[in-house]
Length: 187
Image (cartoon, rainbow, N blue to C red):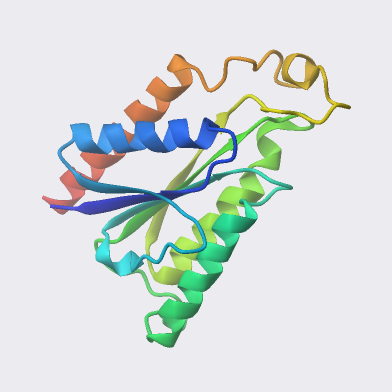
């Protein structure tokens, strides 16, 4: 049976909603899953897991500083243990996906793609086969005073209630599909 982990940071709760939805979808598929909100104290051996999800809200096109520090610390530890191999060969049976939430006040999803690429590069360096990325629009909580109307008048329109039930159901269905695909692959 595959063992999975969801590593994430969240600032306003949007990314927590997505991480919890991923956790519920994996659990519904009878997968052993750990849900971990990272902080400076968290240490994880990524090689203990067959499937890693890693996510963050987008901050200036990248993950939160907390998640970036976690990734850098983990890479350093894995490298010191000789687990990071030249040319990053894919380890059979190891898979990963990144996810993120974004408010899209300027250009929408385009602002989030660099963040998921950064996280997918981390997974790739570990030797995990990167399956995809998930991006979910989320309400900008506590916007600066000079952005009073951003949640209603940005390129994405009114995002006051996002991520909403439909967004989260879409994530749940995609995760269940991933698990089904991996189950078929492992048979």
